[in-house]
Image (cartoon, rainbow, N blue to C red):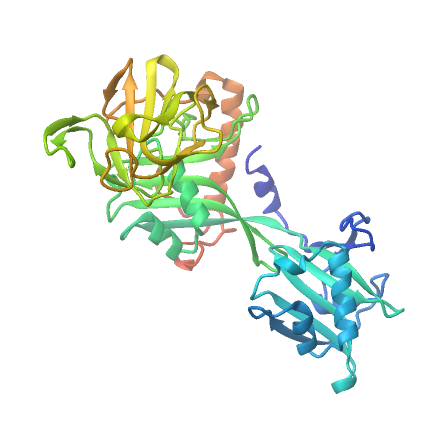
Length: 444
């Protein structure tokens, strides 16, 4: 069930990582994992005896790979002789832990040496080319090098942001410590309720609780899921909780009553766009005549992904007169959506294919009768275009219709609210917005 791992994990944290001793075959992780408690510095752990006994102290030297520099040149620059540098890297290459052809500039490499001065001997190498994973090559008693892979023990932690919007949710959230992905996910929660270009105003308030995956030292490893999203503004006052019903396994966001955020159709099937022309009569930018504009235009950079507004079947995906590259999707109950002026179609998009809400169906362009890159978006009911921005769309799932599932949701909702009210989480980048026990959050 969504977020139960997080709720459980916050009760206690165990700082244990897993060390894989990689054999000289090409199966880099085929060996049985050996648990290692990181009670000593990583350098000491790397340099323990083969049976991971007492640590051996060593000197650490660090450098970053320069453009057009090879790894062997870097290791030699750190003080290793040519033979040791070659043998230590060969162990990593043969275990498929490092591809020497795809090593990025800026990669940080740590070399550990035993001895003093020029007589110091390379004991191990350590580098990380992926968050939460450390790659090592360690000298064995016979002088050979053995590859090791250390995967950090990770835990989900909750981060809470609550703020008043100055310019945009994006800029405000990033200034509080959120990352791009969390802001995108937050916006998607409200994609059915809000046009973020028109409906968000300075002074509106928002709250976000999201998971962040960290290692045993608290360092960021990767972003996690948004589990709570709320907006208190002029256009909308609403809060949603992430929940996966046990009957269908379809994760969605639900309000406090258990009504899904997901609607029948998305209000804006594109992210980060500016509404450039409304539905209604206007002076046509090309013909110059007053004419009914039967859709809504969203200006966006060429190549911006366009999403299917709802589940359905593609009726057509081809060049269509002044519409340029055009897709029309048939939905239930007489609804259709149309997307025009695309640069190109999405992968596999063709007539007759079924698509799910949120699938990429194409990319913003300026094909057909168009003066610049934008999406022309139409909603049709029984073949007639209607204003998508004012349309009251059919609602999504109501958990109240399934009492057992509603009870599951209420349990998860209470757990998320406990996180919001508890003292475990600090607002990223701003300790002033941390919730202390006894504080009352804004009403959804």
